[in-house]
View 1: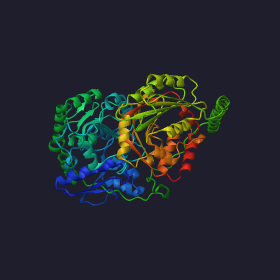
View 2 (view 1 turned 45 degrees about the vertical axis):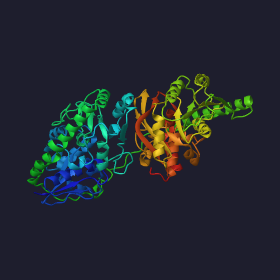
View 3 (view 1 turned 45 degrees about the horizontal axis):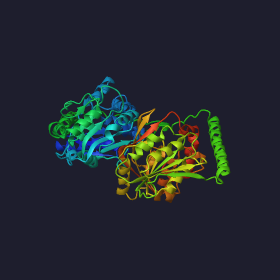
View 4 (view 1 turned 135 degrees about the vertical axis):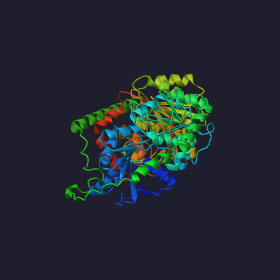
Length: 613
């Protein structure tokens, strides 16, 4: 019996390290010495078996020269974890071609590798004792109704958005992450190892949505096994290759995810029965040690051929680090013309504001004249949350927004609507709404000169009477529990500057946004946090409010605010539930910002050079 070394990339995804740790644990159960290695390469040692988990990461991210990695490919066995048809699988196949043997955790991967002429074995994943350390027989009294764990893709976002009517009033924990870079332990919002098992043990249902729409669906073995081991009932889109686990007995596979979730939560005895059957199957009937042991026995007899050392030309050395040559700069056609158009649009906007200001001065004797209309309930209200709504030319949508706000439950709130000199009848529409709801604390601030979005928000903040201020645009919506959930998140984290939740995107393009936890490196890549958030008024005051009169943050006022908070060491807290709705439309101010996005990003770099760009 040979010792077992299991290698992972030191900077790879922590999900892969979890799988490697399962193999170490299962090997130990069979009495075989096994060790996880995250800081070296496979040795030339006939007394050891070398497995490389996630070779698509190990051979790309490891900081070793080509000759070292070339040798490693020949003396180790790759454990493939990725789905056929992805670029990660293609990288895996390159490494597997040089290996004496390959292993895949899914039968589809085995077939795809064999079709490429690679001798491949199947390692069917199963449970290990550490997975179930936090598991109990509980089903009904688990605190989380639905948990989702997965990378963010357009398809997953659209499917989750469609489920918003089912999920908004359930206790959900929707944890998505970015594929832009490997995710490691310590990234906010993501859980690994024992933390993940505790989360699953406290969840009634694991919702599984496939990365893409290919059929038959890929059985996500790692995610499924760890959920089963914790008695968490799985609801997934249709899958293939799940044997020996059986649809209807160990999990539910269906196109009607919403109906299955409602049925299970309404019939906890059925949910508990499936969860218990899955746990027994994963831990007792089909544990990982049962499939790992005979596979390692076969590898005991395998003697890989060590490649003859070869000296690479000087220009070929160390090419694998960070993957070869730097990318070419992004192509931006007609950059000069795009800049001219942007500046012309902004100049026109500034001129219109000057005209507005002049007319306001002539009519009212001041450029800052504001028409104020309030309900009879406004003056005596003592709100814990101020909801600010900025309005500009959304007369046809603002009533729907206000209706969603006044349906809110669980907090005392006031509503401040700032009309930024709309050119439609929006102000009159809001006046009529206030007249029809005298018992609700609401006030309209009608600016008679347009000041822009940042100025309108700052005005509302300055008049807010509550410490918690919810920012909303006049075309977006909230679910009834949104304000109470976000306020509770700020109560639970007194150091947080703001709280935000996942939003359902509806309209032209369905999906989700604001769906990932606060993580400054992600924030420096792109703004993934929408303006629809609940801020502490004291935090707004500390940093001086939204940035005004800066054309190079036009349309990105919320991103600039988040970056400024990050620069000051502040942070936001994410509530991983769909508590609001973001309307996607054909056109918006974002279209204008795209004209000179490169210049605007450089401007943000200059404003906050110490952030991890």
